[in-house]
Image: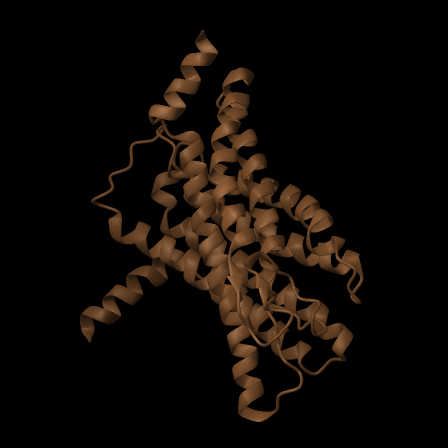
Length: 298
């Protein structure tokens, strides 16, 4: 028991009090919103999510702060910027483009509120992929694993707490989330490699690697079929919405709410892992990337 308390106290000192303050503010804002009208609830929930996620970002930076002595928080800043662009464009051409009853602007704003903090969190982890720092992996392995686990688990679970309930059938679908991640990838690699002063030809040629990463994922969500009695779920995997069935009552409704948001949390975590993998495939040296680089020199 004493060892466990010492471990928790060590990480409490590491992350500081600011993240805890943001977490408390997020919960209080969420609870306050429960007493407002249904229209205001849709505003308080994403605001709570933003407060919660910024607390997560600060905690994440504190945990991996040892790795940022040369370029403090560069990855997070790049990720926030790429997330902003991805939220605007991905929301405009994805979730905001549908003919739903909720205003398109509200849906685009929700995409931005999702993409910006999530992009910043991904940027912190992406920054660890770059070789311009010497990272003592064995010494800080526990902190690194804690930070990455915190990122995936808490960001995914955050959707179950902070998403506003849209009208039935107007939820975001897998294709919409996928488009935001694809825009984020293009913006993130462009921002980072330009800062590394890569030749434009190398940047453009390596975009082929992003296409190679995107096409199989798109094929999976396009061709895989779901069999469900609900017509809004039955069909392509990419068209699967994360629904709350308002026709159910009591325990069945609680399960419907949980199953809809838990599935979305899993989908978000999967897309975050895919984004990190696709970025590494683009940036890291391997036979195909080295062959493309050789074409640039030729």
